[in-house]
Length: 247
Ligand code: BTN
Image (cartoon, rainbow, N blue to C red; front, top):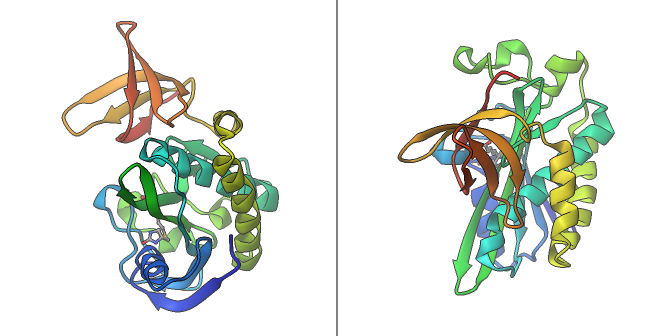
């Protein structure tokens, strides 16, 4: 990971750029970084606010060659790597919210958007896009998301180096991605559970067709969230929006 690192001042989205580079023949592990994005993408078709000079926008282009059923696990692996790197560098108790949000005090400071191409029985190519609010201040955060979003700087009151963070993330990503390739899935899931603020909490889950309130119990081998409903039955969640309810 990171043998090729391509840096831009401005792109529409580092994810789209990484995908282009992969198509042009750049190797698996190529990292794309930009100072700002004009069309930053979030999960579920949302926009990712991407002002210049303050935050981290980075994508890693991969050819994982793992079965599509482990698609969620690739994202979990990535969020484990990022959270571990963040904790090491900043000393802030960053937590994970399923599947891939990074939170401080229940406010989001980072997210991951994985986009992939599946061919037959393999994930042919994947782009893992990482967005972290590093030095954004309260004034930089739009009114509508002030209650749910934060940054490293807002929490700690000091600036952090995007360069150091990039190096730390690449190092951790390299380590955890190798474990994924070696099928050390339990190691990844155990670490995810350790870092998770989701397990054991009451959560509200918005699915395409309905809403659930349940207790998050665990995640399984494929990265699905296992929840226990109030009537004692269990469900496995593959995709959806999870809100942590008050403890
Ligand atoms: C989320 O909705 O939580 C995921 C946000 C992912 C944002 C990052 S920023 C770098 C990369 N490029 C994009 O367009 N999105 C991801």
